[in-house]
Length: 102
Image (tube, rainbow, N blue to C red; front, top):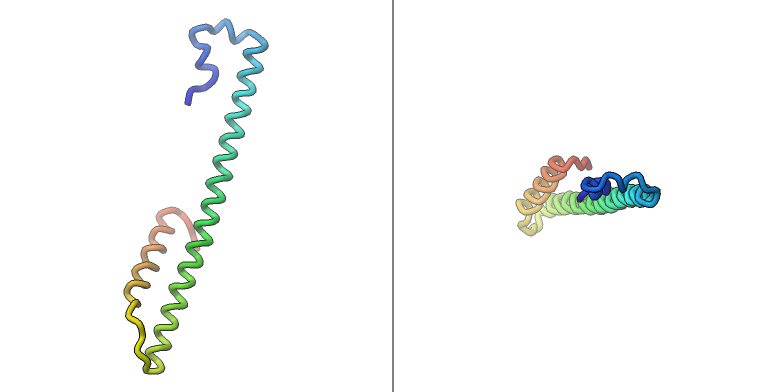
């Protein structure tokens, strides 16, 4: 994205005009607002992702607990322990890589 002042590099004398200066100030204000908006959107996405990951890890831990209880009472447990462990490990690694601490 070009900076607004770069548009006038071939005609620098236009920068002395009051209307041009007002236009440039307005453009800079809009750019700041755009940056703020993008930051808020990313922040919201991160919060949603963080909440979702917490719920997945919580569900994985609950399922692991249920599987242990199946074994404790001598019932035939479903065989998904390895899948859950792999998923949990993957999520924890991805969180560390992205700086999300659960």
